[in-house]
Image 1 (cartoon, rainbow, N blue to C red):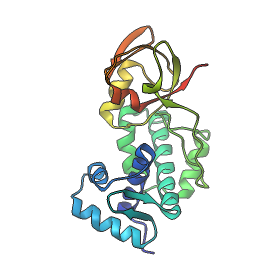
Image 2 (cartoon, helix red, strand yellow):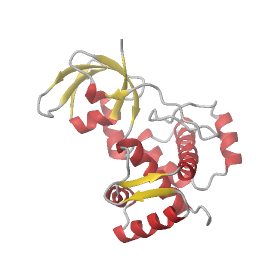
Image 3 (spheres, rainbow, N blue to C red):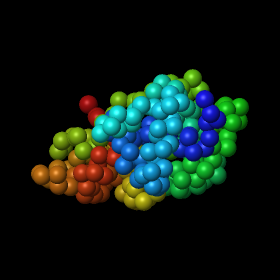
Image 4 (cartoon, rainbow, N blue to C red):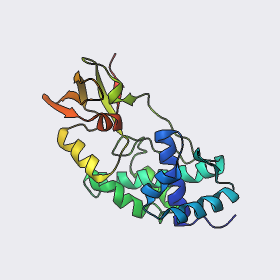
Length: 220
């Protein structure tokens, strides 16, 4: 197997995130996520398939093998611990931490990341609520579900934000929908209309797609 380069790590991490979101990573989604031309994605996917890191089924998309998943989780571990370092110690805004961590994650060795994890107090999640993989490649997900699945008058606590793009995170922070925030569904408009939620004493209307990015732990 050839060296696991930064480019390979980026591909495997992106595919893992797409699989986590949709169950499979379509090549068109990989193109969009990595902002590269389709031909480059096709060639790289073919190479990674030959190296046993993923499987590509025409018209069905790409899925990681155990080997590819292990590498992807190692990158995500470094990424999410880097986010914790940036927000908890350097006090980088949470909407900027994701992009900054993307640049840090490839240069931190496993020896350093172990020391960083200890210094941070062994956090379980990144600032956006997503679980930090263990050194052994395990990942523990709290039971949660998209806010969009809750019905009117149901309530919950924000657990994590799936979409970590700066624009989304900044918008969510302004509304106060941070992990740990209590929310209540005020109203769900029919025909894929907006979801009105109450948080911190204020009501906010969210698009269905935005509500699907915010995962909550349902209150019993």
